Length: 88
Image (cartoon, helix red, strand yellow):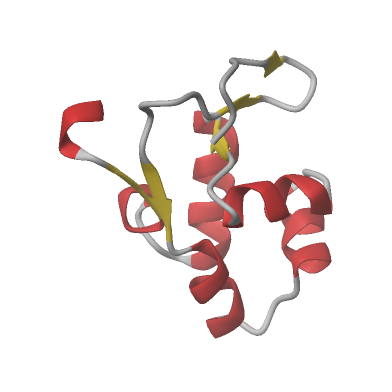
């Protein structure tokens, strides 16, 4: 993860900072649904780059984006984006 915090209110995301641990099953679940990054991005109303950053665990999604992706993939948010117990 990056060593700085960056928030963009237009895209609703936060870059990871050191010490924040989030794992994601996004790539696995996206593939299971037969979606590529561009298709998921359009459905979630974000850029393809946002999906890529999420899959590489370099981005923590906003609640809005996490819920959108959760609905698209028909999985609970905490089954897609998994935080270490100490982070909660």
